[in-house]
Amino acid sequence: MTRISRRGLLKTGAAASVLAATGMPLMAAPKRGGRLRAGLSGANTSDSWDGRTHSDLFMIASAQGAVFDSLTEVAPNGSLRGELAESWEASADAKTWTFNLRKGVKFHNGKDFGADDVIESLNIHVAEGAKSAAKPIVSSIVETKKITDHQVQFTLEAGNADFPYLMSDYHILMYPAGMIEEAIAKGIGTGLYAVQSFEPGVRMVAKRVDDHYKGDTAGFFEEIEYIAINDTTARMNALLTGQVDAINRIDFKTEALLKANPNTRIQEVTGNQQYTFPMLSKTAPFDDVNVRRALKYGINRQEMVDKILLGHGQVGNDTPIGPANQYYASDLEQLSYDPDKASFYLKEAGLSSLDIDLSASNAAFEGAVDAAQLYQSSAKGAGININVVQEPADGYWSNVWLKKPWCACYWSGRATEDWMFSTAYEAGAPWNDSQWDHPRFQELLITARAELDSNKRRDQYREMQEILRTDGAVIIPMFANYVQALSNKVGTPETVGNLWQMDNGRMAERWWMS
Image 1 (cartoon, rainbow, N blue to C red):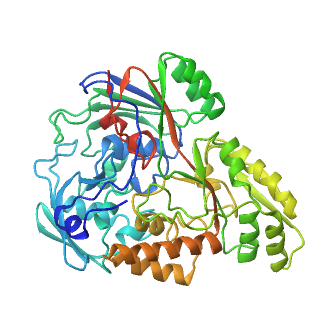
Image 2: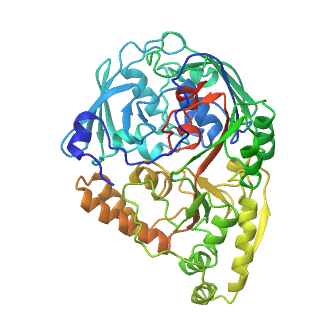
Image 3: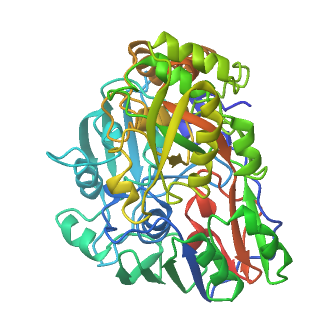
């Protein structure tokens, strides 16, 4: 797969389509009108309009997908386009970036959008005491300068060829300067939809904004209603009985029910979604690389793809860089199930057997508890005794993930390698869910980030993937396709985004009632 030249990226603000997506056939031309009712998982009673805290689909789709905007946006075909930024350009070393902002944009409260809003919206991610998953991105900016009311210049601590992509991160929402607390409390953004009501963990209702800067090219529903339905069976029943028009994360075991219903259809998209088991690498016994290697060989990856995904995905190799990434190292030797090797590494760790807890809930991913039990069964042959701890779905992300030594998790992947690595594998990053810190990996991370030669970058990212596969503290047994279901009344474009579920969470912007 190739990308347009870096010079083209830096000068025009366009990136090549490095992500492939599949969608349903084009149904009809989009038209305005109607109300989209979506039953979505990933909702919590602690949800808010604070983008720094967003971690799952319900708030991603509600915030960046409807109510707020970011500076840039990853298009359905994987290319990068401007959202609140019209264009951008960089210095030759990709260290200084100048963004030209759209004029005539207003927040839902009538305030004009401009450079001050950008600066204040970014600063909240690095404010004292702030807990933001985007902190690694924003902290790389050493100076932000307002050139004019509609032009901002960023100086980075080191060159980063992917910086415009990072500005599309769903945590980095644009708020009105001087009233950010109010905007977070009420949901005041520049998005296509203005909040009508919001009950955290229950539902969100929003109405289409008149005279929006995106015109009639997006935002075809008059209203959207997102209903929190964390239980998979309940979501599927809601769609089958006509209570909602679309749902995410179908249950593969009962997929036949949806296929048999003439009023619904299934939409499957191949991306970089990965189902994972991160270990806190600074906590015993996971601080021993030989224990981690034993666990890598104690899992039957193909069995998980067959029994959990039912074929809707592929085997993973303990690296988050997947088939939709530009520098995916497909030639790396695949880790395979090998109880003898697992036993060997246990002995290298000075152990004859191992007793450990694995926390799991289907809040992590559909089938996570079953996957943990499969892991328990396959690991027994190597003397690894896994006790599966079934955790409650509500509060899983606040009480289990990042806190329990070993748990189930999922990641949507990211459009670029550096974006993925800096979010989840850079030393000290808030979402480094294994607390892993490998000197050579961290060195390569900084070097590759500023490298403009694509061939050199490919070699660097390949070495990083190899280090993760061998020494990393995250088990990534499988990449899962996004499989969601829709009423036949909902129209979708031919190409559907594959970064996140439900068209990158932007169904309110891109879909319509047919």
